[in-house]
Image 1: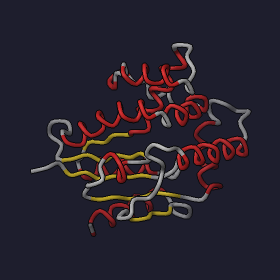
Image 2: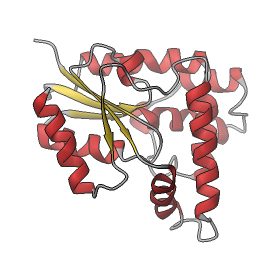
Image 3: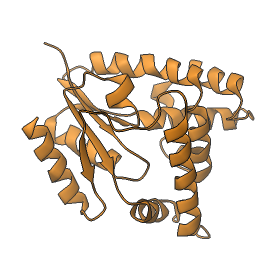
Image 4: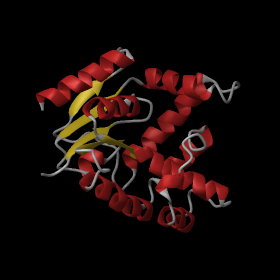
Length: 212
């Protein structure tokens, strides 16, 4: 019996990570935040003194990435987020991480009957045959406010306008890149979380999974 795969895509700060983690917990499935892989590659490039926009630097970091050693706190900074959108546009990086993601989708951790994966190209490229596909989105202002609340704790001088500008630029890069652009899969169900509480968004996602 093949593993159950739930693909959750969408732009940054739309709520897909929170929804994906809760779905995985409630359905006893594994969870993979694919965005953290690109953040980890970007973080590795920065630590090595490289340039996230350089093909060779980005490819080298992707080839040597140790998933088990990812520092989830260190990769959640504004600087790493910006760099992640640069390395994510590199075909070499995407090809390297694509293999990793598909391997996990086909062979989830022991004891798990499937996996919930969130990212930007799960339903279109990584797992086009996923059992359930969701595209989670929200208004620009709502996303900027959520991300600002997350980042201002470590950067008190950061303004919501700056976060909005960062998100707008990242959306542009993600949507316009030649390799695996951010786009809703034709068979994905749209979930707009702009006016939903966390609890309501999670319940809506559970309802979608239940129907599919």
